[in-house]
Image (cartoon, rainbow, N blue to C red):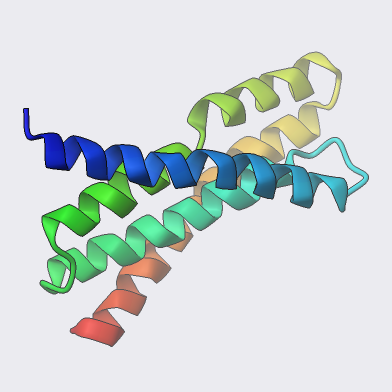
Length: 127
């Protein structure tokens, strides 16, 4: 095991996890809705960051260390598939099936779109 790589992932996660929590709370506090806007925002933001990082790596502008720090560490802790799944289930169980379906479809579509935008952005910057 390479301890430097492990420390890079841990450092990124140490920033990503609290950032997720604080962002989720701040966004959700501004919306009087059952829709999980906070989780949506952190997941789409993570997709954009990861897309940009992937594009930068493809262009040779991001080292493997940066990928570990930001991709695996930061984005891994910032984004949350488990919370997305849980919140979607809770919406459905609570009778808000339209919100549950919208959360599932919109999160996937917008998340994938953010990845593509990130890759294109990186290509424009470093290509």
